[in-house]
Image (cartoon, rainbow, N blue to C red):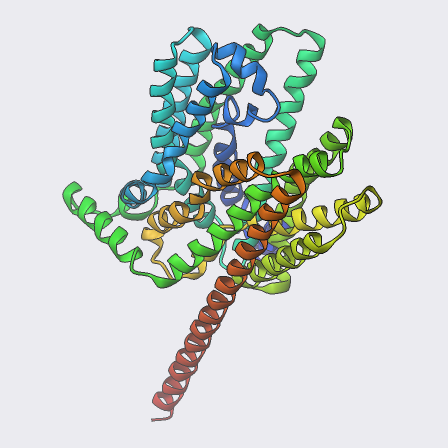
Length: 453
């Protein structure tokens, strides 16, 4: 009776956690440590580029072109995602997260304590880019590792929601402090304090994230390294990995186009700066916080598949943008346009929240999931190298209505291509599930026949 009572108490205690895909509080705590690491590491620099762009220029003593170079150098991570896949196979999620955070801690500390030259800042940016090529796939691997099958959508959705909520709240706190005290020194102090958060976070990751993958195998170091390399090569032969990566590529390209919706309203409809700012906060801020959890719930409890969820979201985005293209461009259509843009934002954040989740459905061995996430990230985030430049060139060389018509037309084509890729992935997954079911039924029948004999 006592054991039964304890079991009932345990089930009740972890009832909510079980529903959202976690077996117990320790697993959930480990998941949260990975999610927090995935945002706090960027909180003292990249997270400031939207809200505190001008202050970053002053603190670092840079001009616009130089800061652009810094962000471009950080973006070299895309070129190193695949080589980083070997590291993500070879070493545990825990080790990669901790080492990455310590490197970021030391470099940001140098930036806040000393006045560094542009050359030194470029070196730091390159270091960050190389680290990020290993770190971000490790975050995705950690989310996958610390969530249960059948709840991957919710896990990835929570990653997006929590990260965006953290970024918004931390920026708002700094805005509040600066409104009371003001000054560049206060902003620099905020960078310093946010950077210090990495130290307790390293301890949290160490305590709650278990060792995993090849790092736990009882073989010699050279054997582990060779196994990691073989795993990377094997992952790159999975058609479903590349198909999922293509879907991710279209989602991220459409997401970049979403950023241009605010200047679209200003250039074409001539809305005021205050209206544009409010729309921007809702469209690219609050929507991201909301849609992460919503996307996860829809994926796990309605669509029961990440590929189905992405297919639906991309189809909605394509239809919405197509309607926007054919609508008249006049002030009498402003509110209809805003509503359509919000629907487009909703669709894109639903998809972006689970952008790498389909890789979890690709039947990749657990010890190779890190490299699978690296390959997916390589293709998925590639649009950063052409989408911004392409859109900027279109805007510079055309009148506003024509320019945004071109940008949104490209968006419709890209979203439609992503819809097709997601449909193919969905069909492939359905065939895979059917094959598994048939194999399971065959085993049951064989077992029954053996028992009769």
